[in-house]
Image (cartoon, rainbow, N blue to C red; front, top):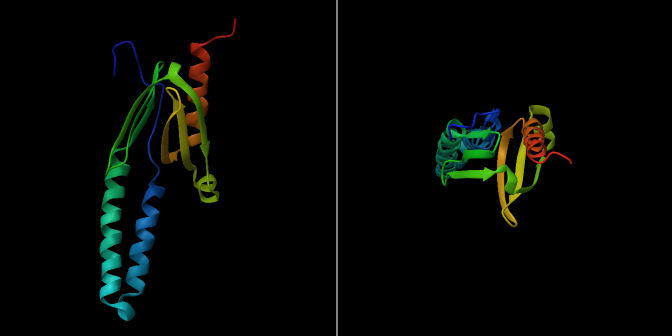
Length: 143
């Protein structure tokens, strides 16, 4: 981060990112007696997916400064973005029903002539998008 900047808002990925792998492991465990090898393969897949998701969850950082949005999320492959606020054309979020109840969702940012950054499982996406919009407005005050 640059010397003339400070973090205004910070969030990260939500722990709901671990629900999918946990469900796969649970289903594999329940099917272990009847399916044997296939259930073991499902459990192994769930464990690998879970490890990847866990490292992505732990390593995720989403920050907002007065001048840019900084995103470091995912594990394989890791996604890193450094998006200047003046280049953001649009920012929005969506939440599934479970996301509304648990406060997570997907954030989409359009910048640099139609380039798009989409980050899933963002904790408090409405607050993050609101803060980014406020900072963009502060950059371009009405005349």
